[in-house]
Length: 492
Image (cartoon, rainbow, N blue to C red; front, side, top):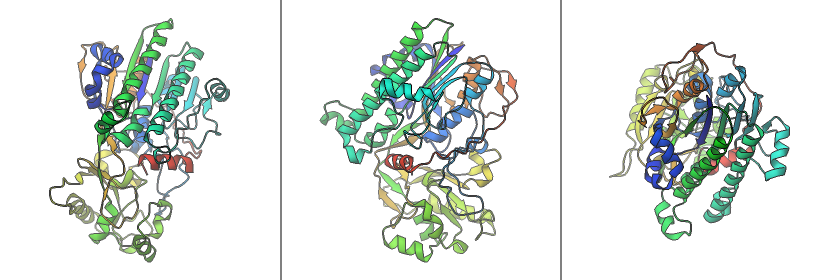
């Protein structure tokens, strides 16, 4: 069955229910479809979430941990090249292998564009506009000439101001829509069509906590509701084009990579580990701390007195809520009894000295083996900290104060949203996991599912096939431009 996937970065099932009277297209799909909360992978972030959708695997198998970042093996240095570490075949690779025509548009983690049967237009996480971000290559010039199209997003909110930022992003989203419509016309015989819109995510980060105040004081009302209604209108336009195209029945799948929640305060775990004696600073690190701290992970290896540091956080790896134990993986290990240190760190972070009446910054701590499985897990951070209500980890490596007032007004949440038609059963609400989406789409396309994926099809049992070979990609994607965008959104 032909399958149309409408991907909404950061769409939250609770906000969809709140705004449902303003979302007629999505409401119609939900009335006849299967829908509900979609649990995501940790961390609840764009790159890991969409990679889980694309591969059907957790990061321990796909090696897509957090924007393709990693520590260089056997060192304390962050790999700043940012190679794309996706080594697992993706959904459109399997579909192309079976002779199906695929269109993949504006989905994050798709740079460099894959050579699939059909076309691919990379999403925003590319080094810059002047790179080759389409397959086939001539499609880039075509989109530029017709629509002044570019995946590169508008500037930072602090440079543009709230009103101009929203206006510029709305214009950008309209061009993304025109690009999707053009691709649907250019490839009318598509079998799998995937298009992604990121507007909801951007307004969540900057306006979620103050949305009701803005609704009362800005001419366009609640900016988050506006983003959801715009997305619903885009969905309606694309579904109208689908209906106009002749061919077999089309299954429709709407999904997000994660949800959202308000935040207004942050915590720095390196500060907590230093105060508890589990981490110690070098002379360079002490000087940096006296000067106000640093977010420069490229210099992180200079900040710590490694022989006397048992645990530390690298904010570029799973964000600032993941903790490494300085064991024999590293050149200057300080830990002999790892289990003892793990327990000490767990006790420390679960009992941070918050002011009276504050909720705990960390609601639970998990060992990495509880979250991930696969050949890459050994190199991952050892402890994963889940933030408490209204708390967010701090992206700074060093910060003089353990607690800060959060600069962002919205953050990601572990539950997104999905809705699928052509499910063959009774419509209604069910909770599923984002790892279930890959086998579900394979099922809808009539294809057997590779035996090494983690999820199960929402629609029932499927046939099995051998996996395609891995395809590591080494082209740099982590440019200064991308880092600046991620910093503006609070990712790094």
